[in-house]
Length: 100
Image (cartoon, rainbow, N blue to C red):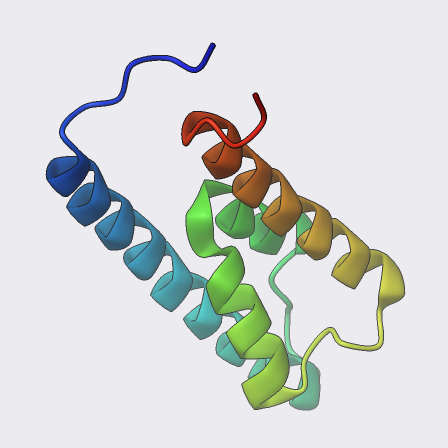
């Protein structure tokens, strides 16, 4: 049985803010990392990018991959990003009662 959730309006607003802010930061990190790669400067470690995805920035990661064509050819990186997104979606389905 999923845990009791707070008021849907409050939860929805807070969730949108967290995912939105985390996604903006993650997309910006992709832009910075892509520029650093082109200029052969120090890069943002992949574990940092995945950490941003994990806290809710995974939509921004997909946006960054699409806009800046960054990290798309690194299959392991993409697989981890997809797994993080799937984990978030599965958690939301579970919380919404979609698994039982």
